[in-house]
Amino acid sequence: MAAPRNRIGEILVKARVIDEMQLRSALAQHDQWGGRLTRIISDMGLASEDTLAQAISQGTGMQRVQLGNLTKDVGAMAKLDVAFAEQKGVFPVALRDNGKTLVLAMADPTDLQAIDQVAARSRTRVIPMVAGDREIEHAILRHYRNQEPSATTAGTRRESAGPGGSDDEFKIVDISGKTVMKALSDIAPKMAQENAARQQAAAAPGRPAAGSASDLLDEILSGSQSPAEVFSPEEMQRLQAVQVNQEKSSKILRALLELLLEKGMLQQKELASRMRVP
Image (cartoon, rainbow, N blue to C red):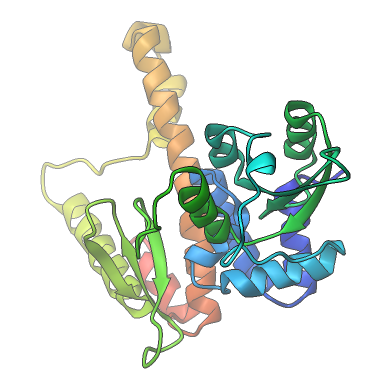
């Protein structure tokens, strides 16, 4: 059986909400940072939360539930504690059949493990319904914590340009609220500058070119000395961890370059010429 995140991805591609390249880009971010795929796609500005929920509802045949004006069911909420609801991204909507059935709002209703855990905790039969990630998050804040959701959500997020902005505009906001980048067109020049700086540094007299962790490992393993003679076990472990992180980052970069090429922000010949090592 496909993993839940792949199942959701397949549903969204089949509904033409996103395409295969956009799905690969979102999955690369998922592999790097974790989280729910629907939230990642929404934060990337590829589709609105409502569009995602509607597509998932149609693709799974499960009902779409709106949580904005929901009247809370105290009995349903008592079946799950707030920490569990926040962790799983679910919200108990209502009890039915004299408390034997729990209607549960989920951003990913294909997450069978979460449904089983809810059934075990609540000792009810669970009927999953589809809601957006932020809808669920706001419902938890409003009904469990008696707080009104703020306009923005803390953490790293991406927002679409909105009215008046071009389709390729977005911004990346860190935890402090600082905008790091405003448009896809900013990426290519920045990459070119960084690449030119690396080439210049590598060509400087008396300065050896900096290699990746993978290059360094290859050099160590192919040398006359054994790795144990060069580094301690703790240092080797840290070096291998750096290599794993570099491999994950390369997936993100590859997906980003594919997106730039698809949108025509970068030409393949230009990319090849800029990345060619003299």
